[in-house]
Every structure is written in C-alpha cells, then in structure tokens.
Length: 107
Image (cartoon, rainbow, N blue to C red; front, side, top):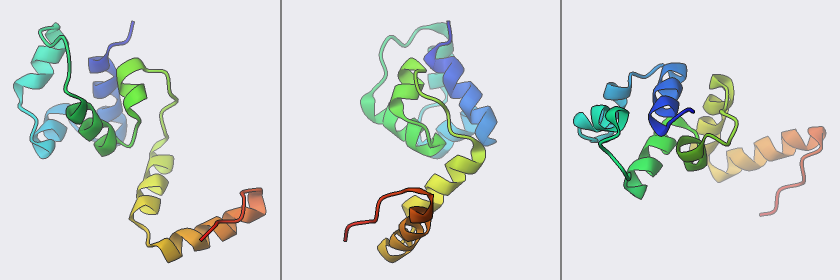
C-alpha cells in the first residue's frame, strides 16, 4: 500500500525536486522525511500538507489518500501559469477554451 511518504517522494521525482530540497525550500525540518518514512510521525499538520500539495501542484487528497489522478508536468505548468495570470488573461483563456465546449466566463 502506497503511503503519504511514497506519494510525496514519487511526486517530487516527477516534478524534478528532491524531497529534502523541497522541505528546505518550504522551511520544513529535515528530520520530517526520515520521521515520516519510519512511521515515527503519526499525524501531519494541516498547514504542512497544504504547503507540500501547493508546491507540488497536487491536491491534499492525493497526498493524503492517493485517490486523485496526478497532473502531468505539462498540466501542472498550465495550472501554475493560470494561477499567476491576471484576471484579464484568465478571461482571454476562458474565451479561447469556449471553442472546446467550456462555458462563457462570468465577470
């Protein structure tokens, strides 16, 4: 059975991160990974799970339960670009996607 640790490490690899490098970047203590791997951690703070999920562009559901399909690297990059877009840029993208059956955006 795949664990939170397994999903975290696998997703880091797919995204081109090292798990320890990601933790360092997020300010998560280095022993977190070894404690997680060994099972010494019985619960994880919600804000830690949210930070990891946000940094990896996956949902907390995926990290915690593994029940969601992971985004491909290309999909992840598109989501990241969309999140950083201005409202005007988002509306433009929505109008373009309308040709593919997406609903018209509401202002």
